[in-house]
Length: 290
Image 1 (cartoon, rainbow, N blue to C red):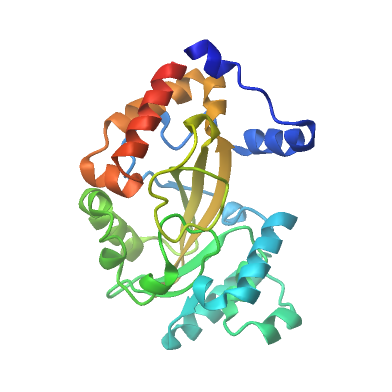
Image 2 (tube, rainbow, N blue to C red):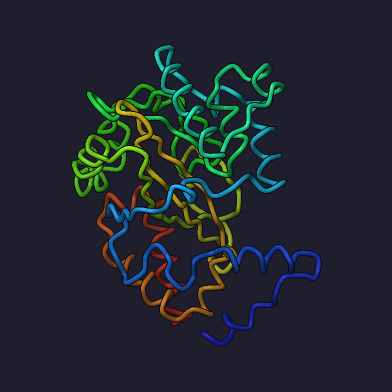
């Protein structure tokens, strides 16, 4: 069985360059599940301010963002009326550190400052209160994985994570303490991961049963950063990377660690991950590769 899986044909010539770029960008040597860790853990590490964002968007990502902002604005951008102070404070910090140059066309055509900010970096942007209820004040999210910013805007952190019961139980209190106590202008980084049936960036809901063989599925890693940029506000960012799941066969330690991480899932995590069918098919596929 394993030999037939390893004999999957490489991408066509037309897609080979794009495929290799995906493989090169994915952190195979130290993936988010490195060491077989549980899926929900804080895992934050401080990073230099110059790495707060992951650079400007690629041409494809820029098109993705601009298309959604033009055609489905309210689906990807939400801002509370009392969030303007926070949005302008973020714009000032991003401009001060070279991440944002005001573009008049964007400022004139986009209703909220955060949407113009999000066009200049690869990351999606979410502004949280760092004190009080820690509400989500404003967000521009063009690549969500199983959540909808329209349903989350204005909610405190505990309610945002409520659908993911295991996450809230295991690290919810740690996240809330970190947001309240984080040092000013010191970004921190962590990574999350999912498995999807395609490279589609926008998933407002779980996919349910994924069609096709797991060899055609994709690993999705979200590089996230948290930075308290103002005494009252913190920025949470998301930047997505994909890799074909079958490529894990070339990285035995990553394969072993992913199987171990999946073995730690409880039923709440399995349900949020996509259900028992998806979970069992993925575990069986990884066992065949091993």
